[in-house]
Length: 389
Ligand code: NAD
Ligand code: UDP
Image (cartoon, rainbow, N blue to C red):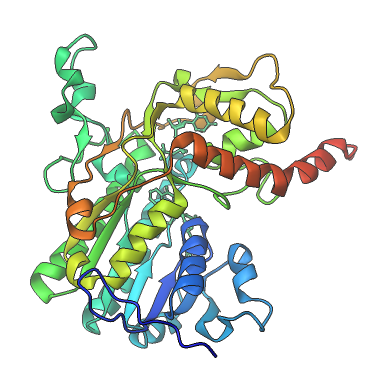
């Protein structure tokens, strides 16, 4: 076997192989992180999830070069006593498990709060009690609405970055009223962040908190009726992909005026990789991970996805590519929205030297190529199937 050259961290120290307990490893981000760790490192992953469809290609066949470095543990962290043992025998725990699709926040607020706060509690406790490092996935949604959104529409201050750039250590967390159950997720994530921070301050827990800003790419969520429930509402990338695959208009919630910055999953995974291998630089920090250069309104995203999909599929776009729909009709009672999300990148840049690279056009091109290749035929067949009477 060829001897691989010793990999070093950002400070030039050799990187020791780690055992990583990755909870939620079977999801979108987890699958990409497992791929990266298997292909480019010598770390071992104890992959914990209730599903493994998105990492099956890493688990089988047994002849894969990393076969002895990844184990799948099918367990629900809500009620499984094996969790503590897995955390105890790992050097690091990465917690990705969560209910994290906005359609659930106002329709299943109890499940959302339990998943994002209560179910994460034992993970934090076991890490703290056993002196194990924790990388916990929070969300950019903890910032809520921007300060600028409360200013009059014509206020010149709305153009001032101080009123909309989101900064880990200075921006406030601004949520809507309790009836706006959309914020159940953000509030649960905020409280678990505060608990982790307090465990760090009072009990010395070594932690890093990640706030993802709309990471997108292949394997995100599901296509309703193909590999997920027909009535399910995934996040915007999968909603719009589904509309494009079915040649239906893309639905713009409340006019599609909200703004988002999208980052390519492969860029974002580089940032997590750096956090894993540079504990001295990452511990005790909260990191925004996003791409401030990729800002669009949801309407602009729909227009760009329509153009890119026409290129990659070779099909002309339909005559009416978008339609407006009210949030009440689309998500139901209690929905509310984040108006604008631009991450400040100072801290992650200073600590880890990380910067995102991929433009929105390029990341949509590779992602929609994947969506077309993976789903177009299945969607065509499901449309052609006669409806059972
Ligand atoms: P995802 O839904 O694809 O992955 C979450 C995984 O956790 C799923 O595979 C799910 O089966 C698993 N899981 C949930 N509850 C579990 C339980 N009780 N026991 C075992 N497994 C459980 O979501 P994702 O996009 O990969 O997000 C991962 C994390 O990042 C979440 O904490 C989410 O809040 C956060 N996040 C992601 C984004 C993004 O842009 N993708 C944005 C903000 C925050
Ligand atoms: N959205 C939309 N049409 C859809 C799905 C989502 O207009 O079919 C909007 C949604 O209202 C929000 C934005 O797209 O303003 C991003 O939604 P996503 O579900 O990706 O999650 P969020 O960024 O709000 O956490």
